[in-house]
Length: 313
Image (cartoon, rainbow, N blue to C red; front, side, top):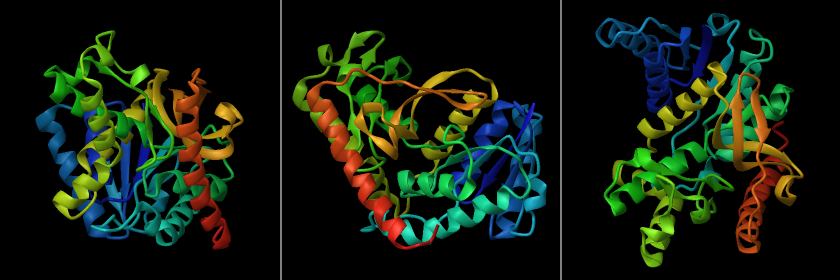
């Protein structure tokens, strides 16, 4: 049994803590937020849900002075940051959220030795880089939640199109989290059947485009970022790590030459186990796929340079 800390008790963080509590694999989940009442209240609400839904995980919350509660965390999930608003790109969030991510990372590490950190804050790829730089941890212990959410959206849209259960769809995508992500139809199957045999090329293209802008679609509908799927996605990553399942998921990780990309956090398929990123899997991409990946990586690197030029780190 293990301990997980979730930083940020907004919609995403609270959902992540709730989903993870239902997995019943942690001794304790700690929810921390600048708004102490929100963290304590949502933690208490989730704990009071335990007798109804049948889990034993203790959930507690606290404000900025409650970081000692996080001591000995095996996994820290960072969701803190300002939400994305209509008309706002992920890159617009960089300065404020970088300061937040760096601050909470350093605070967490005062109380926990060598945790695995999962970053959810946007712009995701750059915030994961900021967390890694601020933490001094191995790049195998700092990763971002991006591809798990993006593939979930992709699979959901495909399930609608095909009229099948999303559970039967397996998919992979790569690249930055956002409009330049690279869904890979060649690695998308439905119960082992290539998706290209079930979905016409024009419809598949439309679904891929909808996936790329999936976050923006929800912002336009709700006036803020999504939370149910992102929170559940981060929890799913934590489960694979805590159970040492070695599940293969697309995650934001630091590439060190794989796919011809060096020293950049970007989405790629990885094996997640007890040590964090157990393995980065290198697919044999076509020339076109690799070109799209490098285009996406270039967009991420541009924002990384912008962060570096702010001299925040």
